[in-house]
Image (cartoon, rainbow, N blue to C red; front, side, top):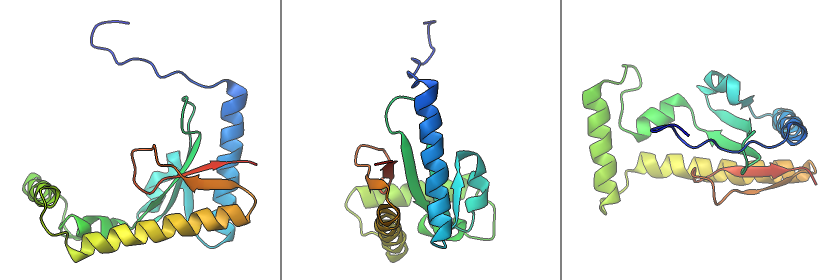
Length: 154
């Protein structure tokens, strides 16, 4: 490994990745059948109005993960950003300061609590929908995102 380069994450064999892709396609299909918007990793721009991001990983580890994405409007509101203007450095700095104050024990604004509650409710709903459809879906506690769902075929 050359100096300064990141270590390579081991990839799973092609057949394992192909199975993960098949599971991810089924997850999208089941969520759409239930009336929810769902997109894969390459379609993330389709989620500006919210929906499920479904990802099949070729690296060792998580396999197939689903995250509920709230709308851009709610995402911006939770950070205190104006929904109509582009983010500028001053607005992002102010948002970062608010987050730091909250981390230091400050009160969490109602809009942040609301966004987190929506994500939690949708995570539980998606788990229920996918389980009802015959998939093994459960909270992916080890994943860096709070409300991620891991999915496997039974």
